[in-house]
Each structure stands twice: as structure tokens, then as C-alpha cells.
Image (tube, rainbow, N blue to C red):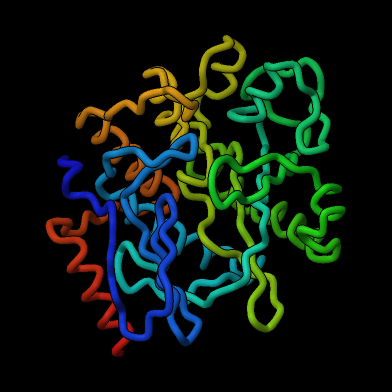
Length: 317
């Protein structure tokens, strides 16, 4: 699959458009009527850097999975989503984002394992038990929030510090914790039914114009979540072997193996096309596992034109 066919940038000018925000993966167009048009690109990031090559169909996977999961969890917490006029586009109502990401971990993996291996037994004010091995389950899932940085790395923060600094008022933060636990429980059960383990994930919330807390951005996608294959998990743990993952973590591992962790002076490696194809395959596999449906590969020969036309048809409808 040719990475040149991926959608890595957009420069739209929709009627009634007020401003544009371009994130690592999503380009968000704010309209005068308060709607957000979120275009999910094929960009992929790790260590707060965007890789030079796009991943074909990654944006479609993220957008369609996020839409499915938002609609499946709106009985737990309302969300921002109204419509998906294109495979790579979601439209919804703007909410004022809380400046924290609600990270929840069911297993000692990724960042929490790196902290644990370095000798730390406390993360975000939450104690981690002694005697754990990488990828062991926590006795109960732990919430480890992170401050949302405009640039650079997000930083771990405790619930006490969040409230002391006035980042989120206590009454709202307690609701965010409750929503986070309920969403993770829902996502974990769904993953188990599909032969996967939801290891950890993050949720982002905002407050709508009428004061309602809503789930924004995405939920249970390979960019926001880490998954293990359930089959053989315990056997691999017992043997001290690495777990089979179905998430973006293997992209981070490839970067680390090629000498890059986003540190000053390091050179960003360029992914060979064979690895780009492998990344696409993994995203598609996760979509099919979690949705229980075959992934429909849309035409990507002229994505910018397709996206623009579909959004315009939606706006004019």
C-alpha cells in the first residue's frame, strides 16, 4: 500500500468557518454556529512527534471506531458527536475541554511499567503494589490523569493536585472519575467478548454550552488504547514472555528499536513501506475485531476532494 495515498494534511475553507486547529492527528474546523468538523487524518504520532509518512486507512479506522464507541456508550455519558458525513470526518457540538486526560490502567504496561521498572511505586498519587511483573493486572484499575499540554509532553498529575490547582473543580472531577471507571468497564467487557484485553486507555471530557459534561474526541481506539490478545495471555505471563499487542505501542517500539524516543539530538527514522503496510493491517484488524464487521476500504485516490465534497453535502443538506 502506498503511503503517498494517505491523508496527511487538509486546508479546507468551509462556508461559515471561523477557525482551524491542527493537532497531531486531527484537523478541527470550528464553525460560526458552534459545530466542529473534525477531519481525522492518516498522520501517526509517537513521543509527541508526527511521523513523516502517513498510514493509509488509519484515519478511517479511528473515525469509524470512535463513532461506533461513542454511540455505544452514550447511555453512560453523553458525547459531542452528531454525524459522520465521511469515513474520515465527524461533526458535533463544541464543548470546553477539561485540561486533563483521564488515563485509566488495568495492567502494568507502557508508561506505568517504565515508571515501575525505574523503582517508583507511586504514579499520580496512586500506589502500585510491590512484586508486580510487566503486564500483570492491577488488583483494581487505577486512574492516572495527565495534564494536557499545548506543546510537548503531557505530564502525570494526581487527583489532589488537579483540585488544588483548580484545573477541575472537585464536583466535576468526581464525575470524570466515575465516568472513566464506567467507560473502562464497558470497554473491557466488549474487548473480552472479542478475544482482546483492554490494557489501558484515556478519555477526554468537556463541558457543553448548557453545562453538561460530555465525552469528546475518541474512545477505545488503537490511538487512545492498548490491547493485548486474550488468547495465550496467561501462558505468556507465566513464561515471562512479551505479550502480543494490537495497539499503537508496537509503532513506539519500532521507533525505540531504531534509536528514537523524541529526545533532543535524535534523528527521526523513516518507516519503510513494508512497515507502513503492517501498521495499516494492524489498525484494520483491530477495527474488525472490535466491531465484528469487515472493514470497507474506501477509495483513497483523491481523499481531500472526497472529504470536502461529503462535508459540503452535509452542510447543505
